[in-house]
Length: 112
Image (cartoon, rainbow, N blue to C red; front, side):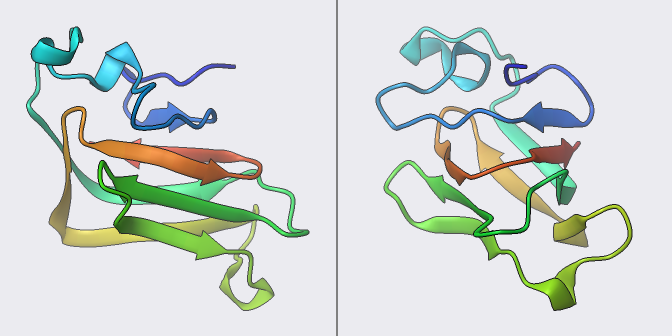
């Protein structure tokens, strides 16, 4: 499966780099089609991963961490799901300004 940027939740399972930002989240100046300048999320979940050595890292365009996690048996609830963000304060992803840099397995669900 490829990343699904138009779903709610957004489903991410494929990484990208600063030079390969998917069209679904690029700014119009970068050639993208997404109409929202900022994606706001109150919940981000990592699910369906294989525990051995599992890691996830979402950064800004400059490589600064936004969300990251390594598998920790103490963090896992039923269904092997780790909540990376769950807050009434929304997490803002700038259009074309963030990267799913590492995802060893599973999917990231971004609710907006």
